[in-house]
Image (cartoon, rainbow, N blue to C red; front, top):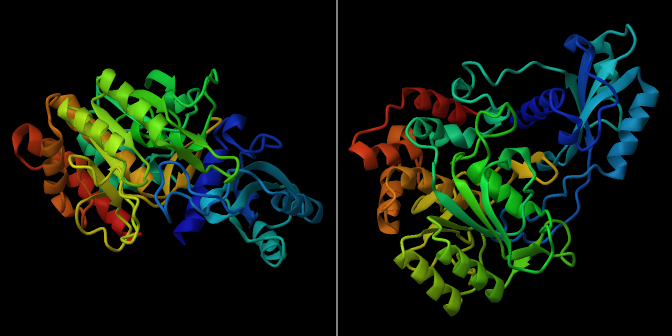
Length: 437
């Protein structure tokens, strides 16, 4: 049921964003009478894609489709417009559901419920329902008391980890986070003012290519807060040192990307030289002596390194999480995620290239969220060491009802600053709503 609600929310939001936020330009402006509009989804077949850079096996979208509308979905919508008194208002492919979602205005006096019954019986229709009105800026989503970003209600992980409570004390000001990953969409409106430096360590392409995985990771960490659009990053005032050490692989298809020891070594050297406070490695691979030495040097010099964990116990891809001093992060949704440090890793709303948004999965996103939380800590205590940060994260488990290994950012920050519990009654209500879903 929650997936249907998400579809409605996304389609409803699509009515208020610019055409560049949609995969397909709306046919016309929205009908001001929502009672004469319907939401229809059609199947949008997805293609297999390989492992993305910064992912771990069976994680971060390894089988998801590209953020595109299929020919089948386009033809289905065209057929519906010829069969029924409908005019397309807005549309958005929803990758996490494998469907294409469209809002239609009813162009005749036919009763909406009568038309919906006809649509539900149509073989081209995956679902059909009224255009519901949802408010993500009311008591049902308390986080919006703090943010004016319209999609914040679709970020339950913020409530579960009490990021809003932590933001009352820190937003990552003056902390530089090195993102060692693919290229990013540096022109995405959510990243404006977030990028301190962008270095291409793979090739001589200028400007660096826009790639998906790095964009997603950057969005989770540092998407702008209170800019009136999109999502909220965990550390929205942090600065990003973007180090392109991975690249999308045409051979693997989709958003799959790869890195190698050489490019990663170059990136780590650059992060050390530029005195990055936090280094995010949303990637996994075999043990590598050179890279381990570089990480050891980075940690010695004060950097806090966060790495994605492989969520398969039989895997030999233990880098970087197994390197001493690295904070390894797994997805909270995995069955064996009861120990260590974890963060939400499933259906995480983040950025996509060309100014878009979508849900993604995997420990890549979990690691990025922990990097953001570490930046919140470092903004208030610049000399915080890696071992101290890990202890604070682990001590926050269970704070204010936070389940399992999930980190409570507000509690970790309060413990570091004054040794008392976070004032968290609003977050408790938000967490209860997330757990009840």
